[in-house]
Image (cartoon, rainbow, N blue to C red):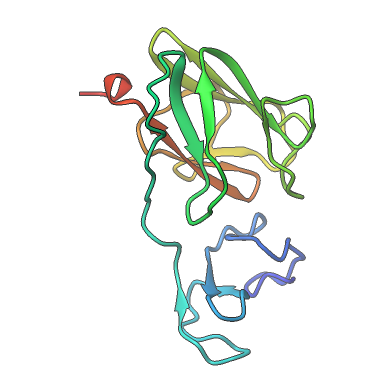
Length: 166
């Protein structure tokens, strides 16, 4: 599809334009996306909505080797458990977390879990890694419910309570 603002070609399931940065709004019925200024779908006339609130419930089993979970908001996809050490993210099958989406690089980023802290580092990806909208250029500390974007794919990090800042 073309971005409704800058008219550049972006993936049809994008939640934002990776070129101009505008947020897109979705039609629940048609599954089409529009500029954040739009209020109604241009196809069916239905009301457009932003992404829903963050809702995540961790698995019941308390595995002490798991630091956190990475999940996709508004998706039924299983969350990714982040264990101690380096957790690689990318489209390539060699990664710990595989995201098969056009804007995700083969080796996109690393989530580093050590000493009760989690850092994210971009791996020179084509479309960048962002935390709460800011591009990651050096390793960056992650906090509970930070929004992480790999290219155009949004995820949220859920930290175990004992790892959250007081």
